[in-house]
Length: 151
Picture (cartoon, rainbow, N blue to C red):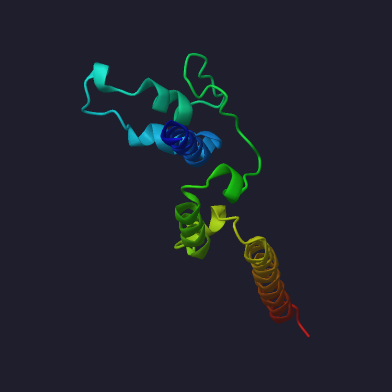
């Protein structure tokens, strides 16, 4: 029984690493940018971690947990019985985070309503500013023409 629990926990741990770092292109890029093996001798590197988190296609043919597969949707009770409370906490923290600055607001798509509102304000507000500037320019041109014509 003890060995089965340990195996289940290790499989869940590998699945959580894959979920956090391996299933999304931006996450894989983040994992590679952290350079997790810097300062570690070559024999100390973990080859499974690099394949698990740094590649789009997961291939672990010689690993005991080779049956690890990616899913589009996970169920916490089934897929993460040991780490589910920590994953819930992490998700709540990520959902509660607000974008800071224009660049983060530009790329943040967690809240679709806020994202569409941002773009609506940019497009409608930008069009309003352009039309107002055009109206001022045309009024100035009309005023200049009215002063030049004798009348």
